[in-house]
Image (cartoon, rainbow, N blue to C red):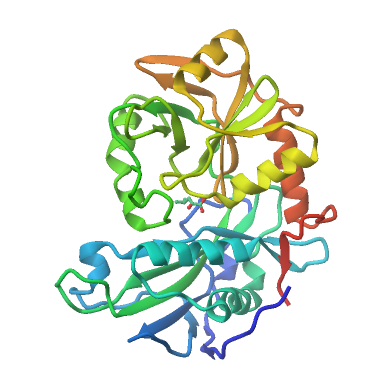
Amino acid sequence: METATANFDIQLTTKSRINEFDANNIVFGTQFTDHMLIADCIDGEWQTPKILPYGEIAYNPAIASLHYGQSIFEGMKAFKGQNGEINMFRPLENFKRFNISADRMCMAQVPEEIFIGGLEELLRIDAAWVPEGEDNSLYLRPFMFASDVYLGVRPSQNYRFMVIMAPAGKYYATPPKVKVETEYIRAAEGGVGYAKCAGNYASSLYPAKLAAAQGYTQLLWTDAKEHKYFEESGTMNVMFVIDGKLVTPQTSTTILKGITRDSLLQLARSKGIEVEERRVSVEEVIAGIQSGKVTEIFGAGTAVVISPFAAIGYEGSDYVLPEITEKSVASQLKKTLDEIRQGKIEDTFGWVWTVK
Ligand code: COI
């Protein structure tokens, strides 16, 4: 697959930090590669994107994104292939979703040659930072924010698009215990739940803090109207194995259209596992755990990949899930997904984008 490439102004670092990087000791989101990309959209015109040494940038305190939250992002991953090549996973899907989020937040559309072309250029330059190892990858974080210096409330006329990259290992060290949230909401119909905008994450922090004080690692959101149906979980979509079928809430304006979610559904179908995208009620799942019909619940997302839950908490009681084994649906799907992303097996889906 190829994309048109923009011209980039490239300034390389004279002091690489790669020697400080230890692929056996990665803490998500704490260490960044040597370079970053910056592209400014000024009055609707994209300027020549720059690749610069990673570092701090100064801002005017009146920029709109700081005050009114016009800010979106994507989470993507790159992997080291079997012959040392670098593979991005389904980058066009993230590119499309980014511009859907931009549209909802009244922000500029980013051209493919800057989004995909910029990622490729950065990955060529910082190739040494893509770690090897089973659960390791390079996490790619494209993001954009309003950069008008103006305190009036209106869509900004200027935007800054950036990409930074951070080595990633396993997101959760142990299976999370997750609280079914029945008081606070993540998203309501007509809102911005389907957009990957910064505010969705900010508003989740308070209920997540309350849940953490009760011993839970993460939240399982329910619908805003009745708190009866599952939506998604923290930073990921949620999937259930019910009677051997892979069941997940259908996407809507309140649920993020996860790319890992979609990949797992396609993989499950290809393995002959029955898939259902439908409303899943809390009642069905609690009863199913008790009767043994619900055998797995897991989160699916770029950062977490597949994260089996140890237990879910609902109205003060914890419902413990069976331990995951090699035969579990989550393990089977994760194995195949990893093998495709690392180029260990043929990619019959056309998901892998090898950087030229
Ligand atoms: C991702 O999976 O890329 C996410 O967006 C989660 C992130 C907020 C850690």
